[in-house]
Image 1: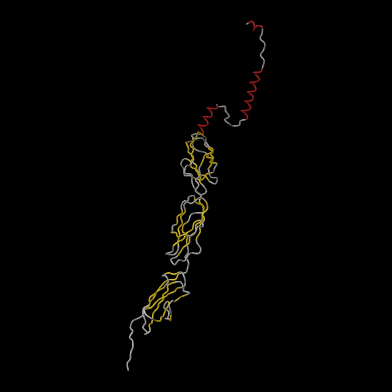
Image 2 (image 1 turned 60 degrees about the vertical axis):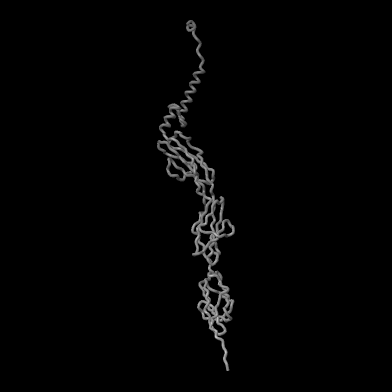
Amino acid sequence: DAWRWTCDSQLPVVQWTQAPASLERTPEAVFAWVSSEPAVYRCALDGAPWQPCTSPLELLGLGDGKHLVSVRAVDATGNVGPDASFGWIVDTAPPETTLIQAPGRLVGAPLAVFSLGSEPGAGFECSLDAEPFVPCTTPVVHASLQDGPHLFAARAVDEAGNVDPTPVEVTWEVDARVPDTEITSGPFEGELVGEDVPFAFATTLADATFECSLDSSPFSPCAASWMLERLPTAPHVLSVRAVSRAGVVDPSPAARGFLTDPDALATRKLRVNGPNCACGQADPTWAWWSLLGLAAMLRTRRLPRAPATSAARGR
């Protein structure tokens, strides 16, 4: 009798034909493979015991984190091939978007800068004024904005492709109008005035306020009607500028120079009007005596002359 047999010492080798990405945002994964020779297969997930399996292999309900699947082939003679392993990460958690920097609710410039934050490796998608989201990088700069309300929204997208379902949103208003300032009441340029000086101002923006500076002092808030009181004798310059509700300042303040000297002003009035001038003051005694003097003058002019005597005629 003769015995015949086949000696097979070649090991079957598994080659992957389908596998997930190294980072997946879904809890499912599908694997497929082929062997270098006909074989059956054993599979293991995350170090669990080996189990019979076939290609393709579908894994469901995977938790977030790292995973490792291994496959080995066993040929007809029982040769067990080397393990073919594949590792990947499942990440199904959406990222959080953080707003680090944004403009205030009312700004006076057509420029807005936004700084965003999220988990390491995340990118961002942004939308301005309800336009579709587009990829963006932080900081996000929007220039040449029109006056009026605006809406900015941003959402983070992590490395697995998960998108923040609750984007951060910012609403604000741009008002870049520049006010103009005018001095509408007060001494004229170079006028000599007393120690109390009234001023009034106007601006091209109805909702603007004013800031004043006397003799190059720092600007400070002032009313549209302003009284400068008890000024020392000296030349003075008052500057006033309008400030819009968004904080835009008139770059060319209105200014008025004048001289305060009460003594010189009183002397000038005496020279012009005389020492007995009431100078605008209501003095009833002076007015009464003036009327009496005027009446006496009129009476004297109306008295008839006496007829001339004969002696006078002879002369």
